[in-house]
Amino acid sequence: MTDTPTTRDLVAQYIRAVPDFPIDGILFRDITPLLGQPSALDAAITWLAEQCAGADAIVGIESRGFILGAPVAQRLQLPFVPIRKAGKLPAKTYARSYDLEYGSATIEMHADGLRSGARAALVDDLLATGGTAEAAAQLIMQSGAEVSTAVFLIELAELNGRERLQPLEAVCLLDY
Image (cartoon, rainbow, N blue to C red; front, side, top):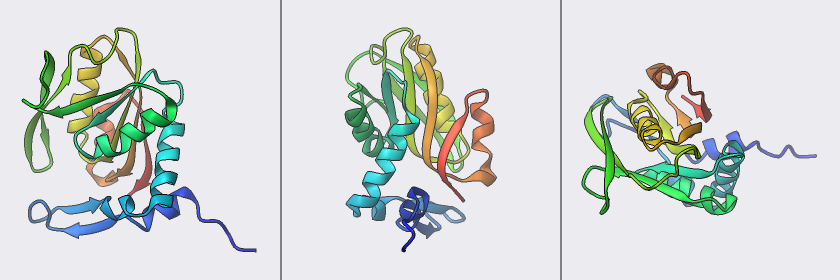
């Protein structure tokens, strides 16, 4: 009898490590090989959706959070709310600036993207320093919603990003 690979094993084999991207000294974890493997991507989406059970909406962070979050929302039959880089959303927005491991950025969410009191699951591909996820969680709370969970495919554990999200618990499939 052959062992069936776990979701973790299946997904992990399609995560590529790219040294010195986007700048020297950064080891980038690339999910694009995963996107080219439908069965592994389906397993990842299924795992993410399971973690988001009980949410009223799925919030995805630009850009890989869109790739993962939108199919999670569709699978759960929930609204999808995008968080984008500043200046990309056409209606009234809430904005947050934050620092990341190699610079700084500002993200925005439509002010009417979530209803007050909604339970929003935050979905992204990577938890690194936690700056982006923390800013996204603040946007969700600014809208009057709550963050029910923060779910990531990958965590770079040595960067301690989950500490910035406390008391919110981060759920991650893979850690490096």
